[in-house]
Length: 213
Image (cartoon, rainbow, N blue to C red):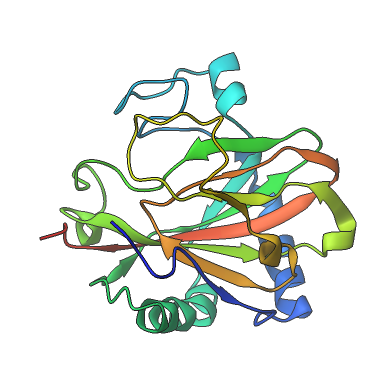
């Protein structure tokens, strides 16, 4: 799918206080991040990842999930606005639990896309039969607090791809700005590069709708 905008950006729309509140609220419930879903550069499509070293090669971080309404009320208006201003106009009507992520030294998340090849089934009723359409990243850390940890996009359209190519890659430098929101279609490939010093905090949300027609 060719798009005019592969992501849409809102600069510092979340206050530093709210960023601090989210970090404090979520840091006590952290767990080791796990992975499931689609292909990456070293794997075949639709394979669930094994535990252990394979997971850490793909993704290494700590996460916490939450569904507090005060968070949704802050973020969802920007999802709707981006969907309109970017001209995507995707139909969506559900938001999954938000995911808070802590990236420490050398922690990262390799190339992936957030959408799956089939609609959800064994999930809460409101999600059944739906797919991820719009992903959101919220930058919670001050950029002075860490190095590395860049959000990088790869604007390709299929699994059969040489990840050494650079033609379609773009580091989203705007994502470093604290309190900023990045909205993008869930089929867009992206990664978080390894953190080389400090700690990076972020929050992601996935917004669902009926399968593409």
